[in-house]
Image 1 (tube, rainbow, N blue to C red):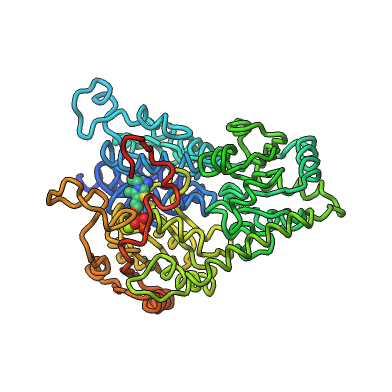
Image 2 (image 1 turned 45 degrees about the horizontal axis):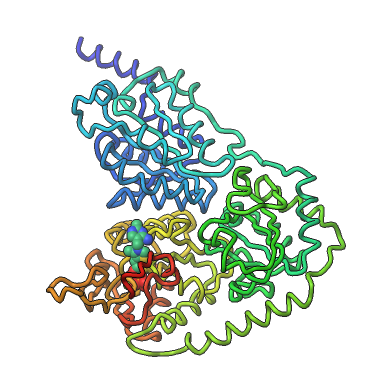
Length: 576
Ligand SMILES: Cc1ncc(C[n+]2csc(CCOP(=O)(O)OP(=O)(O)O)c2C)c(N)n1
Ligand SMILES: [Mg+2]
């Protein structure tokens, strides 16, 4: 009798499905094949079942790093990166990354388990009680909650579309614990799933807008093109290169747009940045915003010469955000660039030769000035000596992905290390956030399979340093180089009170970060000269083994806040 009942139950459940399965099915149906997260109630089994179903599940040591991984996965693939967390504290740990993704226009979905609505809404003190949906809303593009298993398909469809369509960004998806255990008929479940068709539809610019922009560009005497990370995201690499080359105009890549065209391209004005910003008369922004990174398009950095701006962006509200945009071109970057190329026709005039000549002269002068500094073999190293070694490595291995964070470590590496291919430079983005390093490195390795070189300030690394265990656990081809100058900006500050505490910017002197990697079975190296550094990085890149190199940098070598010290508030009462 008992056996018959069991048999009946087995037969019955064969026709059923549950919330766990529907989440996994919805993800797989839409090509979301990777989860970055941290397990715990109520999503531990979701991770297990997802792994069993063929989704790659990467377990991190802290949700913030998993979130940064998901964000950069979105940037690299144009599919939303998925971060999975537990309720309240795990959700909050992932939230910084969700806000970062939104600010940077990276498509990402933060999926968090949550506690029981009936108890949360009456504030009766549930396990990890928090109204997560309300908290997430102002920090992302869209936030949804799914209460019924039959709505999981729609919930994912909405989240995917919100993340990737128009200007991409972060989306929050709230999945209460009870949802996972809900059971519905397998047939109804299958029917409830949605395969999202054309998730990020092309947005074609108006022909009049294209013509207006080209008229402005053609009339320029000193034109400039600025490529932003939106242009890199678009994956319209050939069309963008063709547009820049056909126009003959100098281009300036923003940090994560470096490599869209090689930094060594004859039209690249990266090494003449201040000259081109000041002296240009027409500036065409492609997927770049006039935010603080471009001094808001006005003020000293932009000089006194009158300027006209052309702006190519998918978001109409971006136009006139900081200065007047004479020629807005609204649409997705790929469609806009192609439309401009078509409209330029076969006989586009060359850029004015005197302007090109002066930009090239300035660039060559600056490059020549820097060259000897990059070849110094001092020990302890200065930034330029160490970066000179790493610059050669990227030149020889242009497919390697460079992850970069810190202050001096970031600003100097950005200037020194030439990039040769699109989407190979990943860094701190719009906010200049510390802590993206290990998450970005892990996602870059997982999503591309390419070797990764992470150049990290010792402070920057500390924000996500525990993830070296994750790197070792998944045996990822990541080489982390820590620029160890004993602290934030410099390791030489003194405690002005004369007391025993070190100054707020100073860390333990002579630390050996390489030992952290050894603790988990990876390779650790202590490098004190550029030659040693170069040898160790080459060995790591050849072996593909997790490696951490402690690069000993002169603690006095850096400057306050790297290149953005001017943003520190200055009181005339307290002169530095
Ligand atoms: C989340 C976050 N917290 C704090 C900061 C402030 N901050 C900017 S750079 C930096 C660290 C710089 O030191 P390091 O990474 O060692 O680079 P260095 O200049 O010494 O080469 C910090 C803490 C930040 N940008 N982001
Ligand atoms: Mg430092």
